[in-house]
Length: 321
Image 1 (cartoon, helix red, strand yellow):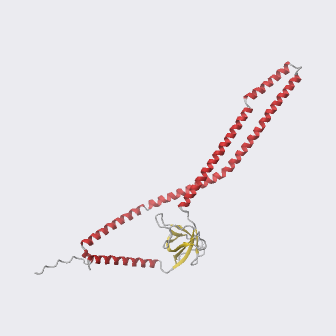
Image 2 (spheres, one colour; image 1 turned 90 degrees about the horizontal axis):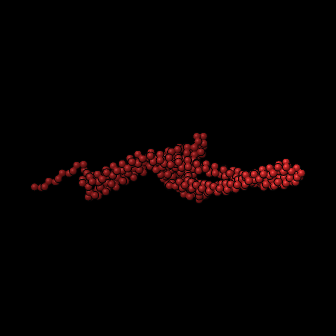
């Protein structure tokens, strides 16, 4: 058997020993003392058989199967095996979660309530749907589109109301302007002069005054509908503002809540990335050191293949005399 064959056999033996060790440790940790449970979700992104199950953040089991529920194809049935003694109760809620942002997804179960009754083996755990990033993005886009349309409609209505108000004010200015006031004052002066100077013609002057009074009444009658129209316009403006005020307030409140959730999510992402920065650098450094050690071992095996079998190099054979 040459040196390369020995090295290959040694590496294969190490790999087999490592696999047996991992299998033994796994069986020791997740032994036969397991209790089956199930839960249902509409979205189970990344969950697969073997996904970790957390109870209050503690690893207590594994997912055994993920499939569409036969009774309701819109839901995903997730079955799992959990350690015996885990206090899963009727108030516990299962949801899609993860230990950290960089980790794989996991099924997270809340601790529920102390006074709640424990769930029997095979029971269904209540579930809570998790909002995905795609759903959040669609909601934000919908709110932004609705706000834009609503603001455009409000701006158009306000421009129309402003134009009507300006026209009404212009009509009022024309009806009660300086020209009409000067004309009325001139008529009154003429009446006084006629009464003082021409008493015999008082009846005729009185008739002229009556005629002038009729003209004044006609002008007042013209002003009356304008005032009524002003009142109607103001009432319509108030009704329109009252109708638009509450939807705008609700949309703005919903937009503010969504922005606060987005801000909180971004802050959480930054915190997780900053918190895992040192771990990421440490992992990369360990990989580099392991690669260097493996290269050194490979070079040593190539130069001294006998070191895999013997501690010391054999002495050179003596030439027979």
